[in-house]
Each structure stands twice: as structure tokens, then as C-alpha cells.
Image (tube, rainbow, N blue to C red):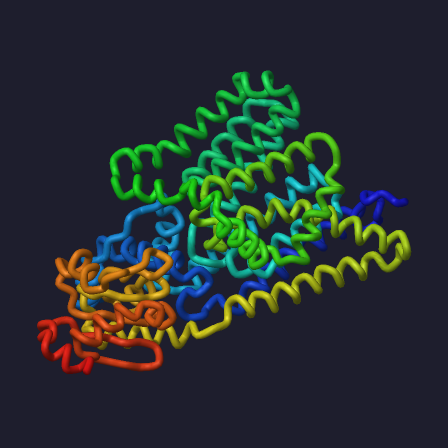
Length: 508
């Protein structure tokens, strides 16, 4: 049987580069159709949050050109920082150059970051795996439907994944070619990845330890100066921000506490949600191919590296049991890890076909890439196209109807972020049933919202509204309906509650 490395196309450096250029161009082109679309609908809650932070940075020191109500809305807005706003700062800088907020700017930036991550993935895979497997892994990373969408969304995860991949490449190099330069580069890039988003620490740590143990054994790999230097840089540069933030900020400490709940980890809903996320992010057919691809992992350092990465993903799931079964974008680091295994499986299939007819290989390879690109584009439309324009228009209308009030309550699927962004308003989100069950709407309103003296209650999340009949009764019995459309309800809270007698007569 012919070896994977023996294919003439892959032995020709020029042809190999041409194929890679084609893949990168196709990956870029597949992400362009939605780049100027209105609003953010890939992961709207998180994307709108980043968009609002970028807007605040843009107008922080220069509000010229803004209306009084826009200035009032900006002044009222306050978001707790979950991680350093690196991507938001870069986007706000480009906004300043462009002279206005442009939704295509963060999308283009994240597309380029995803492509940069793909470059690192290929460089690493080309050293760990056969060349054909590396190319197939790259195609998986670029054209997996979920990756097409998430890789262009406005949030720090694309930057984190890209930096993780570059960290892994330099970690591989620092173990394959021992030297101070490679070690410090690996440590610094890994630290920057962790600084951008803390969960990156899991993947760079397990990968480094896996290779260190492979080369020197458990004792020699863990107890040596190289390992000490790597983790010293990782802690000082990467984790110090989070350690200080948790120590001085009660909100950050509360947020950190929400990420790990042991009771959720040992529940059936966790396993059910995890399987659902794997189905949505990777897909069952691709997941089967990924698992089968583990059989073809070559022995040696590559096997240790991939074992470390899969162990890292398992630990990652354990560390974030609250988000793993419900948040698709939390599984973005899985895409490149699965890509390595998928690449090996795809390479084995292509090799079998090549052995049957060697001349057909070039056409089969191009056909494979085109097929993956087509499937990916179809998946992208499935995930992306929707009522984005309608939702944006409704949010702007709501802002006008409530006169851009900064004292509102909203029941919205994005926790109000879409309303705040397009409607230039501010307020507090009413809990959904997956946050906690509201047994007494009147009591919750008085305890959590009354002190804010809200002027309007906005409902756009009709599914949740139907699940909360006590909230419906509370609003309908106490406050007049100011506006009703197929997209939203607005209750006017500025007057006094209806008298009890009136409420009783209405219910009879």
C-alpha cells in the first residue's frame, strides 16, 4: 500500500502551496456573504455585548455628533468585564478610522483571526501528521458549518482559538527543538492566549505537560527548569489579570463562581446538553469520523500531543459544567482538536481511493475540498440567515417608542443587549425561566426592579412570556399596554398601579 507521503501532488512543493492558497481563498470567500448583514445573530447576546463595549470605547472621549438621548444612553450603560476587552479595543480603533460603527469591521477582523489560526493549525499538523492529513484537518477547520459562523462572530473566542493554535505550534517546536528562544516564545504566546480568555490555560497546559512527559517522563517532565519557566510566564502574564480582578471585584468573583457547579456536572441534563452541543457544533457524521480517526494517530510525540489536547477538552468540560451543555461557542476549541483526528480519517479514505486509481487523485482532492466548501456554505446559511433585519428594525422602533429611556425592564432573548444597541436605551433584564423560576412576579418586581423606578416593560421574548403566566397577569392587571406588534409588547409603568378593585373587576 502506498504511503500517504508518497503522493506526487503532495511531494510537489509548488502544487502543495497552490492547493493551500486555494483552501484559504475558499475559506475567506465562504465567509463573505453575511459580512455586511445588519445586527449580530451568530451568538447575539455575546456579540452585542462586545459591540456595546466597542461603542463605549469609541465615544468615551469624543461624543461629538451624538444626540442628547444617545449621550444619555451611553452614560447609563455599564457592563461588567469578563475578560480584558482586547478585541473590542481593536474594533473601536477601526471604527474611529472608518468614522462610524460598521458591523463588517468586527466580522472581517474575526475572519482574519480564524484564517491566522488555520495557518498555525496547518503548520502544526504538517509536523505531527502526514501532509494529506494536515490538509484535510485544515479543510475541516475552515469549512465545518459551525466554524464558518462562529469564526466571524464579534467576540473574543476567535482570537483565543487562533492564539491557542499558535501556542500549540510553538509548544511543539520548543519540545522538538529545545532552546531558550522556542521556550520563551511558547510561554509568551500561551500567556497572551490566556490573557485574552482564561479557558485557554487548560489547553496550553495539558499540551505542554503531555509533550514534557513524553520526552522526559513524569518526574523529569514536570520537575525541571523549562517547565518552571513556562508556567511562571503563564501565571504572571496570563493569569494575573484574572486573579486581581476576582480579588478586588465582587462581580467577577460571583461570575467565576457561576462557571463551576458540581451539582450540574453530575446531572443527566449535563450529559444530554453536551451531546446536543456536539451534534450542533461538529455534527454526528463528522463526530463519528473524528472518533474513527483516533485509530490512525501515529505513535510518538503526535499521539502524546493529541492525547493531551483531548484530555484538555475533557477537563474543560468538567471545569465549565454550567456553560458546556448550553453555550455552543464554548466548544470552539474542540474544532481544531477534532480537525486533527478528522484529517487522519479523511486521509485514510483518500489514500484508499488513490491506491485504486492514482491518476484520479488530483481531481478527487479538489473535488473533496469543493464539496466541503459547498457543504460548509450551506451550513452557514442554515445558521446565519434569519430575521436579523426585522429584529434590528424592531429594536430601533422600541427605542423610539420608549423615547430611549434609560429606566426600562425587558424580557428579551439577548438579555436586552440587542435593544440597548439598536434602540439606544438602558435597563435591567427580567429573568427567563432558565435563569430561575419567578413564583411571585409582584414580589420580584418590588424587590429587584422597583427601586430603579422603571418607566417601561418591554417584551420581545414571547416564548418566555408565555411560560410566565404570573408575569403576564402582573403586567396586564397593573399597567396599560402602550404598544403591541408581532415583534414586541411595551407596557407603560410610569403611572400608578391600577387599584385593587379595578383589578378584581377586570378579572370577573
